[in-house]
Length: 250
Image (cartoon, rainbow, N blue to C red; front, side, top):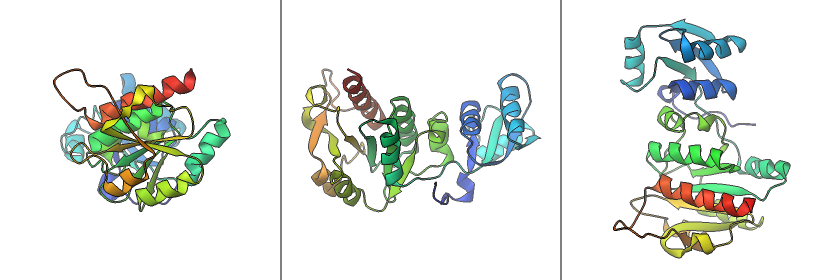
């Protein structure tokens, strides 16, 4: 079902205990796992790897430092495909099988992998049916995104499209309404988000691109009561997602 992975070889490294464990549990294709020991939570990772017939190699911590660029590997790295992409139609199939109105997250110009990883983590926790990314001007599913998502990238389906605005036009014909995050928008807490919904999150620096903005059915915002007038993109996305969850669970 997943498309052939297009991530470059140097991007096929997953590291950190939670990220590797979630990759194993979700059956992400892995070639082998490198560990600095086999005790504690590393032991659990090794047991899960053995169950799946994945080769385990014990190495010195300096080896992992070198491989991750001194990243916070926590004594474990897995080499393989970080994740694959699915088609947009598969995202709709997921909601249909669950008997739920589609709940999609669209990222427009989210180029910071840490922001994307955080959005994926919240989207998975909030029960979104999937995330849609454009092929250009966007972070992709790299090891940094995987690590930041704390393994959620193994579970949340992600589709990648050539043109986000064009995809929105096609999805609108299937009954999905799109709400773009914008400081000048209507209050999200007073907007009906219970139906077939796509939340559209723009970049912190530039917001939503003009073509994507034009396809949004409405703009929604969060109330700001302090002296700052904006939030981090992933934080704003998380609040909006859980407002949708609150309404859909009511």
